[in-house]
Amino acid sequence: MSDRIRIKDIADELGLSTATISNVIHGKDSKVSQETIKRVQELIEERGYIPSMAGILLARNNSRIIGIVINRHTKYEDEIFSDNFISSSLNELSQEIERSGYFMMVKTAAFYEEIVKFASMWNMDGLIIMGFCESDYKKLRDSMHIPCVVYDGYMKNTEKICNIIIDNYDGGFQMGKYIYKMGHRRAVCLSDNFICMDKERIEGFRKGFADGKADFLKIPVHKTERYIFYEQNYKQIVKDYTVGFAVSDEYAIEFMHFLQKKKLDIPKEFSIAGFDGTVMGEKVCPELTSVKQDTKERAKKAMEALIALKEGKNIQMEQKLKVLLVVRDSVNCIGVEQ
Image 1: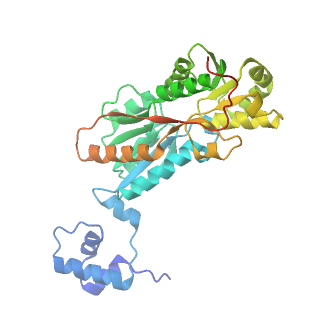
Image 2 (image 1 turned 180 degrees about the vertical axis):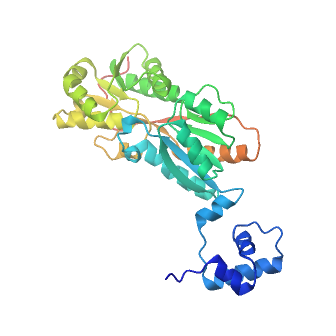
Image 3 (image 1 turned 135 degrees about the vertical axis):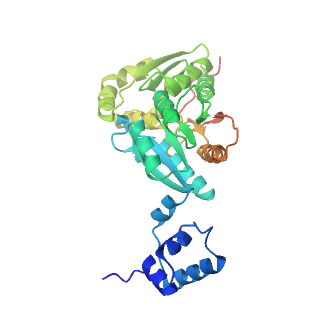
């Protein structure tokens, strides 16, 4: 038999209805006298009543819940939260959401219908969405009325949905310019696609790489297939190029580790650079040269946008943040600038 105090116990002791007690607990006390509210609150504290937080949040008009939904893409192979960009983004978002007085709930989803159900079930105050395609954002925009912010996604039409983006093209440009300055003239760009954000990064790289040769090499989406691809092609890659620019730190570090297992002297024989500037780039050897995006600032902008939209304010629906080239040891100088 549980000794947990119930609403009925509080009501019986005070000679009030359970409805009155429930209304006070859930903040629906506009028709309850201040004296009664005080009596209820004092006894609840005295008796150590522990309410259901989920019940309280769902009963209120404002749940104070911000949902984070991440695309459960097959490329993550059920290890979404092991991805350095995802984990670092969630870390900053959790702090910013708590600082703003809200609660965070995280969900992975493969289809937009799951997002709609998730938001409705928990009476969300807002959504931050990561990694879906533009068609999904359009469907969400047409089927939901709560504030939505795209944290990591590509979309041209930002009607009703705020898109917090980074300057992918300029990041690629900065990297290409730097690598060219380091004497490299033959580069290969590594990505599993040539669309949206990755395309912008590669095109920016090519522009910054001036008259250098920058080819694109499409690598498989899934890890097992990528390692087979690396095994079949790495000798030709290090023969034809002096540097590899991967569109993410994940891919850059993965390829670096593969080459290291082949007993190649990476700093002298082949340079590697990435994009995202995640903390993992500082923990590999050689440390990874990358393009850093400010996840702290991005999280702050996302919450500011959600709160502004919730309050009915007009905001800039596409907000582009600057990126910064981070020079470390993985790109070596092979000549003087020409």
